[in-house]
Amino acid sequence: MEVITEQQILEFVGQYIWPLIRISGVLLAMPLIGARVVPARVRLALAFVLAVLVSPLLPPVPNDVPLLSLSMLNIGVQQLLIGLAMGFSLQVFMQIFVLAGQVIAGKLGLGFAAMNDPSTGVSVPLISQFYSITVTLLFFSVDAHLLVIEALAASFYSIPIGPTGLDRQALLMIVGLGSWMFSSSLVIALPLLTALLVVNLAFGVMSRAAPQMNVFAVGFPLTLVFGLLLMWLSLVSFLPNFNTFMYEALQFMQNLLQNP
Image (cartoon, rainbow, N blue to C red; front, side, top):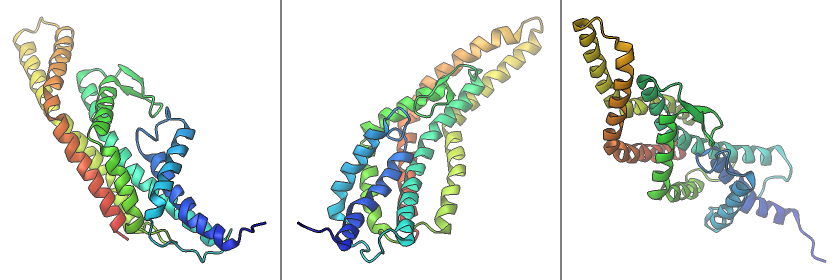
């Protein structure tokens, strides 16, 4: 009867379990795959497949960690935090377009026209949902998911499996994603907001020239029509913005992993 030794268990944990934890953290926090509509079994199966594929490419992992010790728990927690940080950066990238849609919807007066987002479970304006679906289709059409898998495999060389993980500087970089999200969403929404400002100024001049005209009754449908037309025209710059922000998100992941 073959006896499984403690050393064999440690080698199995280092070769499969710790990579599985990091990969699971990425799939849990990243958009699309980490959405609520994706069953947990599907994410777990995908994480297991990726762990099996990545395990032969891993650098040497520590195999002298005592079994069921705090050191082993610390390594597992560090892998989970690294995976969550990578997935969160992609989540912020997706929220750029959702936030831009909320700003545009508020300016058009469509803030009340909201629907439930199946990926997050919260109500978002229709324009945000339209942008979210468009970004999802572009994400898979440009094979961005393959770039994420490539970055995930490279992360095991940038931050090898061990007791050390993300430091204080890396956490500050993650916090700085908030300013990047707001500024990038403003870049998307600013042309449309500027055009709608000109339209509102025109209605202001009309109200002064013809005080008897009900600006609110006339202005709202015209603003909505002009806004939708301008949003349709602004779709020309949607793909360039997507490529730019996707590159910045992947660049952030690379800098985050090289920071330690």
